[in-house]
Image 1 (spheres, rainbow, N blue to C red):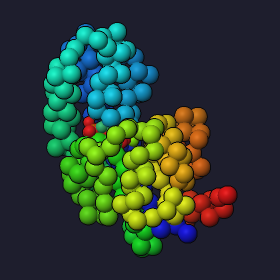
Image 2 (cartoon, helix red, strand yellow):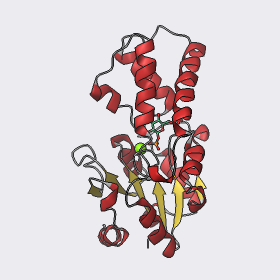
Image 3 (cartoon, rainbow, N blue to C red):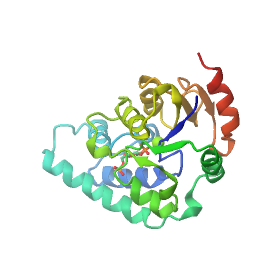
Image 4 (tube, rainbow, N blue to C red):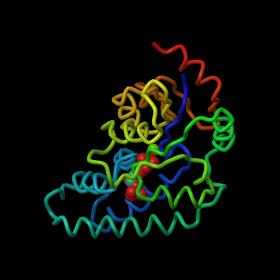
Length: 221
Ligand code: B16
Ligand code: MG
C-alpha cells in the first residue's frame, strides 16, 4: 500500500539546475576549463564536491589543487549559487507540482525530500513549500552520493516506511539508479532514454498525475 512519496528537489520540484550549471560554468572558466554542454549536463544531481572533481577531471586538472583549495573553489561556486537562490519565489515551483502536493496531502501520504543539495531548506523556504514536507535528509550525514541508494534509504527511514510503501521522484539518471538500488518504485521526469530504468516515466512535471502513477504502482510485481 502506498504510504509515502520521496522527492528529489532540483529538476523535480524546481529548476535550480540552471543556477548550479551557470555557477559551475563560471568557476570552470576561471580555472581555464571549457565545458561542453554534455559535460555540464552530467553534473545534474551530483554532489558539490563530486561535481568539482568531475570538472577538474574534464579539464585534465584532477591533481592540480590541494583539498583546501578545492574547498575554497566549492565555497565560491556555492556563494554564487546562493545569490541566485535568493531571487527565487513560488513562481519557480515547476508546473503541476503544487496541485500534486495538494493531492498527496489529501491522501495523508508522508512526504520527504531526498536532495543532494545542502541548500535544500533554503530553496524550499524561498519557494514557500517547506512546511509541506515531513522531513528532509541532511546530505551532510551521507557517506555516498547518488547513484548510491543511501539517500533514498534514509528518506524512507525518516518516513518510517518500507521500500514497497513509497514512490520516489527523480530527474537524473544517477537518481533513478539510487532509487532502484534502494528497492523503491521510481518515477523519472525528463529524458525517456536517460531515465529508462524508472518504473514510470514522464517528460515534464505538468504530466504528473498521482492517480495514474498509483495505478501503475499497485500493479507492480
Ligand atoms: P549543493 P538534487 C543536486 O540537487 C543538484 O542537482 C546538483 O547540481 C548539486 O550539485 C547538488 O544538489 C548539491 O547541491 O551544492 O546546493 O549542496 O537534484 O539532488 O535535488
Ligand atoms: Mg535532481
